[in-house]
Image 1 (cartoon, rainbow, N blue to C red):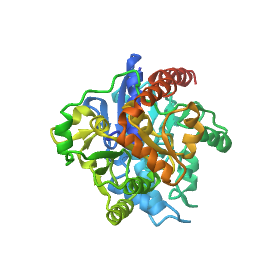
Image 2 (image 1 turned 45 degrees about the vertical axis):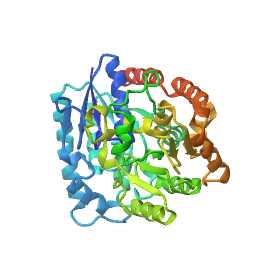
Image 3 (image 1 turned 135 degrees about the vertical axis):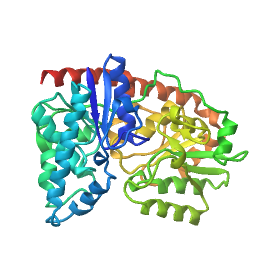
Image 4 (image 1 turned 90 degrees about the vertical axis):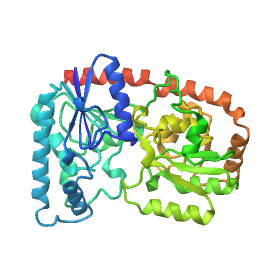
Length: 414
């Protein structure tokens, strides 16, 4: 089949882009072809259908977003602007499906969280009008973010986030989301955890470790503490700064791989101030990170380059839909600090992974556990192998292939 993925963007290292790529890999292994409708794409041009208005950063869409949240009535003209862009995007979806002869649609978070309200409305209308088989992959819902609220916008949210259209097959990434869909809308959803291809060996470094460390400005004896997340408040990066501060060695460098800006730059500024106050060497390198290893150049990196260089990984998130960075750290056999966020406790912790865990605060015990792993990296080898085996069984491509296959069959029947 020809399968069309739809979202605001499929580019870079955000969770939706990464997880969509994994779904596409599994579908392509099973003989399907995949195509991409979005506002920004790092997929080949021949399989991409890029509409700038699909991106949440498009000036018109950003203006709509600034006007609609947390208000009892819209400013003059906003409803018309929503309708106009909804129609534009609906027409573009029609052309996309015609051009690539799409048999099955997979909206990726586009009808889940209203980063682009007109896009979600357009996707909903298109599915309803065309009857195209659809699997809606939900990563995080609007009610999980305080900023997505307001009396004026609620009818639109009720209409499309998610749509209650018969025949759509729904997939969620955690148990809590499945319960919420059932309780709120009587929608049954398939739980599909985030995954990694744990059966595939980690890729070889494209350059020597020494060369890459030099490019990152690391000197002899420096240790790299990697925070592989976006710079947004729910990632709890202040805890990573606190950890590095309490480790008390100048050679520990805290490097953040992903971008800031999705929720403004205030949080990044706060982190920079905090790091300066505590004397922590904090480095942002998102401007040098490419979404895929193939995109790398001599002075750029992919995540696949950074993880092998890391001496330790921090993942102190306050909330996660699942936790891609945790799986990535396990895949690269790295020791990792994880805050026991709610989804971790319910859907991950019970499998017995060997991790450094904290409960909302970096304690003396946590600091000592991390210090030992940094000083004696060989002590983690057995735990790393155990973690990979657990993750392969629970969060590997075979799990995704089985559940995705079942959903495709159901969508075609519906």
